[in-house]
Image 1: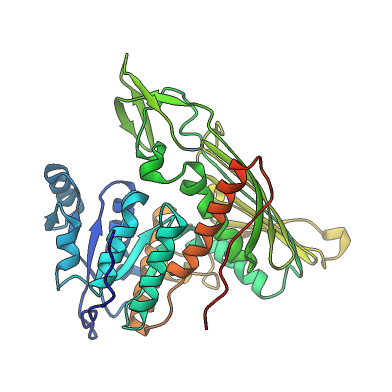
Image 2: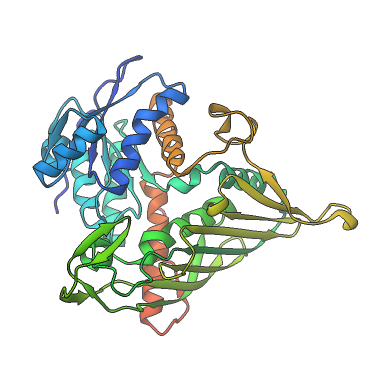
Length: 410
């Protein structure tokens, strides 16, 4: 992996000029991002309407079929050619984690803005290299973004607002769970998410990364140390089968290969603001399809969020009259709530794909105003350092392990 020290100037984006986007990858995240780039200008006022200029995939036939379905005219089978094109403004990386660093470093060196799916990379070293390159590119007007899309859930954004407004008081407890069940069947076939070389880790990087980001973002505190366990329940899986959603059905009699990532992660954590945390992530929680949960308890109140009820936020105010105390359910669909004034009448709700629409709207707004995006690569690196500490702790009999954060250089 090489990186250039010279950053090309980004393409000009005069008012009204389309923002030309290259999507790298056309599976689950590629489709979600494509939908978002196309939908955002229909609901949000964007001076630079995104234009889906190019779809990149490894197999020409499959990529062409995906491009036809997604109504993208041009394809490439080599992401390098996409990065080299002068008419591309944004490189959107929707590929497995082992490819993120190489693509992002090349795109930044070519003066492209970069949106990269989470986790940022498969290692802290890669994430550090990407963040350093992003810092150099930022001086030339190039921006980076990391796709922690759950931040764009209106209810979770409202929870952050409540914390910032002091409604919860001193934050004491943070507990986060991310529960799925798509790997519960021991005969679900192997795919790239179960290969450490491609995915970096299992439930830890795939879903717990979202929990770490949400916990730090909503609470306003950083995790300083962890005590962790990682576990693999099913150590081999069929090598052949039909894909269905994230999982699939095994082919009868297919040979089995090794699972090289964790199936579940659990850890306790300390935060730099004095809070303590408990985290759990698994893809083996039968009946839990996508239960991404966050609860924060403070001296004045609590919030509780579950993505399976994504349009609501539970809020408890300890200052209420004792006779009337209790968690209240807030329907986060009013125009006063984050993002929702751009959508439907009150009470009509949003869905999973709309988070990516909000992400695109935020990305374009940051580019148009030349303001610092959130989360950028530097913020994503903070999550990567926590994931690394969790792995180190789990490998060391769950010993308490500090999260290493180098002091900033003058």
